[in-house]
Image (cartoon, rainbow, N blue to C red; front, side):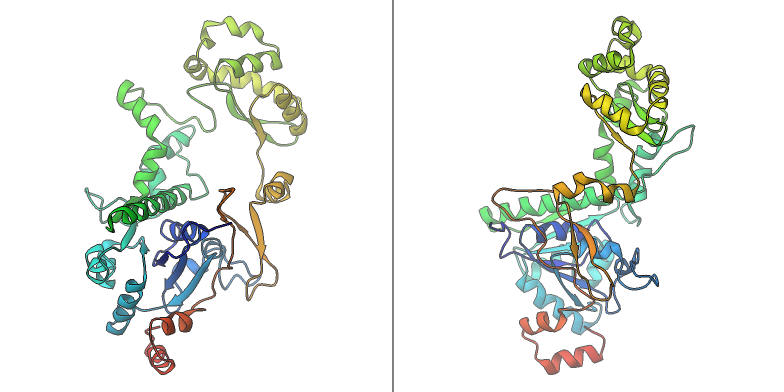
Length: 396
């Protein structure tokens, strides 16, 4: 199968997730991605260590480093800036989620890039975008969750709740990759590069958009109800005799199936449950009934009964239970990869997009620190002696 971005070179100056995973997605589609990081390793390389002594390269880097080559570089020194310029001349796309002031100091802001290569594409992710009163603030995924209304609505009993996994970061990265794809198409048609701006705040607002729309129109001032739905029902997590299950019923057909399942068919003519919204308004009553039904069954029994009537449901799994689930293996979403310094293979998640004519699988393990520095520098025209001298000065 072909790789749609074969021949495209991407320079990944990103940190953590929002920038680097944009580049990872592009690499999955065939782009040549060069990960550029600090001489001693960038901060995101060491998060969530996977070795017994809790040192060395971490899980975050290994997940977002796949399909990339890696080099070290200090672009804050004059010789380093020259290396940056040579890299840019060979590149199609630059990815960075560093503060704009840092980009300018490194010569990676859009105007500086254009001066080196007119049709360059820059994908720049930030926390709050490049306009507005918060534009210079720094932060991570949690700020997007906190300042979009999501934590408020996910909370319960007045206590806000942040989701553990950094979904705002990954959403922003996917937006960045989508923007680059469109920018490449635009360049093909016009010869023009462009600046792509994404933000954690913008991604979180998108995910929270329907709630914000409702608030703007109706001023309901909703408060969080944890896992319980507010616009339909029944919908919540329920304790069984040996675990928990999630149930989600939206629409009249599913509500009818649920009433027959739990023996409450008379509720089909009850005005309190006449519409999705009314069921949401009275979901506490539906939750009480479903909680009683689930409490009398094991998780396996409850899911089997709901599956039989085609009611959306699933077990609440621990990470270990996810790894042991047969469906994970059947879908081939993760792949064992050998990595230097680790005693056993690491299990990395591949791009969950499967295409009949385009290969999106993992081709290359994540690079060790500076693994391809010499190789990349030589391709830029540096001799072995020049590379050795730059290393002695800690430029590369």
